[in-house]
Image (cartoon, rainbow, N blue to C red; front, side, top):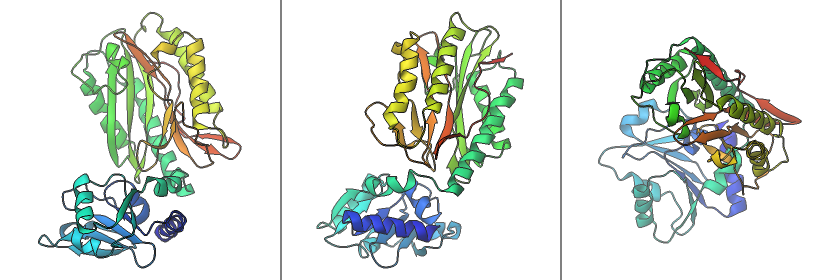
Amino acid sequence: MTADRIEAVRQRMGEQGIDALLVSVGSDLPYLTGYHAMPLERITALVLPATGQPALFVPALEAPRVQTTVAVVSWDETDDPIGCMAGRLPADGTIAVGSQMWASFLIAFQHHLPAATFVDAEPLMAPLRVTKEPAEIAALRDAAHGVDRVADELLGVSFSGKTEREISRTVTDMTLAAGHDAVSFALVASGPNGASPHHEPSDRVIREGDAIVIDFGGQVRGYCSDTTRTYCVGSPPDGFEEAYSVLREAQRAAVAAVRPGVTAESIDAVARTIIADGGYGDYVIHRLGHGIGLETHEQPYLVEGNTQVIEAGMAFSIEPGIYVPDRWGMRIEDIVVAADGGVDRLNQSSRALRFVD
């Protein structure tokens, strides 16, 4: 797989006139090498020339962790790794740089290679990563099934009297128990905090009548999960169920609109129109969805103005939300994959409003 991906990158490098690719921390590195580097002040980077052998430079103390088919060059504490890598790069060529490389590293490369032209590697890498291979989709599916299990198990948890932070810890523990290798986030937003889509769990005590937005995810075999379900403790706030019925229809219709050949913005428009027609258009404050894979948020982004055409194999979230300031919020989020002939919904847990004690 690594060799095939490197060959695909090199083909695109030739088409775009790029002489070398330089990738440090971020998801392009494991995509090409299978190695997830720790984000450290000691640089790890892949040097991939248009021709010749690629090399993965790693700190000597990290070398025992590396498992890859790419040639590994370890460097010691007293070495100048950037100088060594610069010696393998074209002095006056065009070098594509991974978008998540630390600025301090890039400045050092520019110092060593003043005649080189450095460009963003995103246009080179994104088209390759955006359509998922079967093994990638299988990992995304396993991750989605894990968080589905947690979303259902939360129905047996007592929420009333506990803090958001306590419920977040419960979600984290459940997600790991459901087979995830790591948990990236477990957002719990109750009552008026639900109107903030990325509210960090706090010491607010959850009580009767609260609506609760729970958004959580992590990784399975390096690939991400991300789901949101909305819960209520006892009877929901006035008007909440009516708004939720609009939200649920918007999510259903947006999922049904997914297929190869449509644009990203057209799917966003389906959900946005239904919510606006239902009288809640002023309470939509974010895009409909984002791509997912080795990163929780990656291309494609489902938002007005993005005319990117959806292709088979693209994986992304469908997550409309309604947020009424100082009162409540609600969101439903599933991961889907565009497939020949339609859509493959990876999350299968119920999207109904969930009632808990």
